[in-house]
Length: 375
Image (spheres, rainbow, N blue to C red):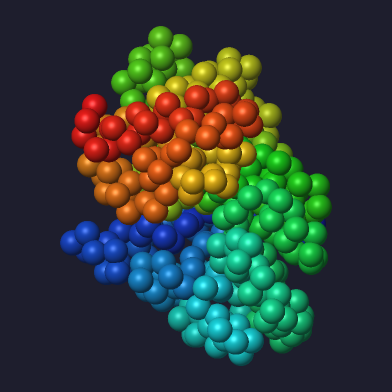
């Protein structure tokens, strides 16, 4: 296993982190973890050098932390760093910060948590935490020895990310980042900003929920065959992240031992600046093709839309449906979307500022027709 520096701390973390959000389950029931298999996988990972285990209050319907705690018995706890997260959306008063932390310590069967995150911060949740005197609470629980390092995970625009990073002496942060999401949420700018401020940077959704793993779309598979590329598409996505010095640890939510072994093998062969020019060029090529029919990077420069259309999400669902032939699955999510494509009033304000020069209004019409079954 390869190890990497964790920001300004003196800790070395494994290149691969075990994400306990997609543990094996029983009868496709997300709340019923297959404990024996999950414990076997977590311990296998630790035995092969993984020392960063990531969980959260909500994962597997609040059962993930319990199973992680069981997996870390028999001497395994001393060999790893545990990361878990405060469910910010459930906090109503300052004492709730303590209430959930105490419950999490009990579920994990641990006297302390190595890496504690404020979960899924956006502008609204950030304001809530400020109102709850978050910084004073952090100093208290650190002094009590209940948490060692403090961080946050993030889902909002770069400007909000920068504001949060600058507000406190954080130890680390967790962002969504992969070769398709370089301009989404914190994005590459956020990665570099946090790194330059001395934060450890944890990467989530490195394979975009599995979209960048497994069997690629036919066109991509053919490109890979013609290029004689020696890496699998999964390995390519992971190595692209590890190739960057700013990345501290890459989380992967693994559901099978096969996935775990494949990712450990990738991590064992990882490093910064090891991808050759041909591989980097190839990633640029497939990243454009993997976006789908609309070349949207989800940078959100087009937002907010005056008519209430969630432009990036419309294009994301459309691209995923077409590229991976998942129309029925994405149609369900589209029908739940408040800012559907048909709300577009053709004001064209978005087209004046789109850095990809997308003809947004006409593409939104295509999205609407597609999910209505009219094309």
